[in-house]
Amino acid sequence: MSDVIPYPDEAVRERSIRAILDAGIPQPRQSFWGFLSDVFHFEGRSLLLPQLGVLLVTCHVACTYSMSAYALPYYMPLFILVVMPTFFRGQYCRVSEMEAATHTSGAQLALARLILAGGGALVCLTFLLALEVYLQRSFENLGRVVIYCLVPYLACMTAMLALIRKRRTDGAPLCAAIALGSVVFWRWSSRLFPWLYEASALGVWVAAVLFYSWLLAKEIAYIIHANKEVNMYGIVD
Amino acid sequence: MELSIDRLTKHYGRKIAVDRVSATLTPGVYGLLGANGAGKTTLMRMLCAILEPTSGEVRLDGKEIAAMGEDYRDVLGYLPQDFGYYPTYTAAEFLSYIAALKGIPRDRADRRVKELLGMLDLSAVADKKIKTFSGGMKQRVGIAQALLNNPQVLILDEPTSGLDPKERVRLRNLLSEYAGDKIVILSTHIVSDVEAIADEVLVMNAGRFIMQGTVVELAEQVRGKVWELTVPREQARFWQEDFTVANYRHEGEQVVLRIISDEEPSPDAAPCDPILDDAYLYQFGAKEA
Image (cartoon, rainbow over all chains, first blue to last red; front, side, top):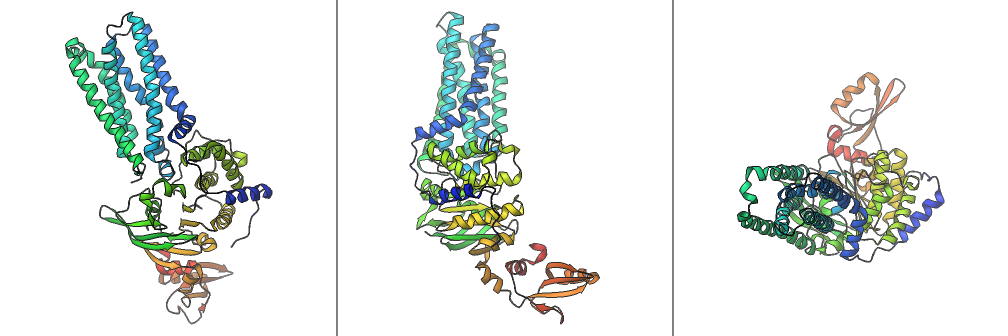
């Protein structure tokens, strides 16, 4: 054994080592809500502030250019685009391997992030709809606007969760491409497919909402199942 | 406590990374030694239950670790080879974040983080961003996060990489002090790190354990095969071509070669006491190692 090289403050080191060695192993398990509070503490800002930024931009555009009801959908993928870095950060900062070896499964972490991001998006969407009602001074189109907004949001959220589940190394850029592609698609959809925004096409939108809700529910069910089964959702390949 | 590895195998397509590895680990420090690509990291990932084996199993006190889930991860500390961090976090914030993932309540985590920062001599930089740290300091943050939950099974993949000699000695001493009644497994390709602290050494090559035993036992395997030979400097190159030379030391115009060979390389060669390095080189040869 080599010589012991003392730390600058040997007393501090000794005290620390003793405390570490004397510490017991069993720790009280945290409930999921306690864990959610911790995730909020560490990631709340990066999940909520960017969504607030998107909300402000959308509100500004809506007020300045008196945005029509079918212009709102193309802002919805932006709510996914801005939270995406937080969902994928473990992967591109090379922390996911370490995270996977902790008490928390990758599934639990993804679920906590999903709840926070989804909650934030719900508040933003409610605010946007309230603004829409205020600007139009009517509740007449509210139902249609809700559906117009939900379809792109659900589609992008489902795509993001599927990419996380598949643990693709190109998951983050692919997710960004899908979100940006959606923005472009919805931006041009009213010109390319004007019939889509007519009252008679409402059935197509309802079907789309149901379809993407079903896909999203499947993704969330997978996360919950992985969580319960202590499945290694965050396993490395 | 006993961690048993039973015919653990991992295939990547047709490539076999780990090939039917078996061992029984009890409390102590285990050094996993092997060249790059020997399968050390794959084995460690399977021991951490973050990589699914193709076949075989790992059991902690008779329970399969994959089925134990969070119960296993509660007693596990892991430092991956490629230690990553969030660049916006300070050392204290990063450790608190990992403590939260490890399920440690915030008040206990704060105390624990402070203790570990003190132990690893990082207290002065606790509030500095990790991205501003040197390689050795980052590695120490990595070691601290592995120790957060006072793990019973501590797995460190190349913990000494990036550390300067002084820090390496500190880490060795720390691990020796920490081990006690715990299982500590550390992988490295630096033989001296293992030699200094490991109670038992597992040497891997091509996905299999090819040698297993204490440092003394492994070194003894090459007794009578280690020689010292003094030759003129201009001849040294020829000896290196024909034999495995473990060491090369200048003495004036002469060179003292430490040669690993089954046969006496020259009547002038004198046998000498073997060390772990010699046993390792005997298995792999100077070029492969």
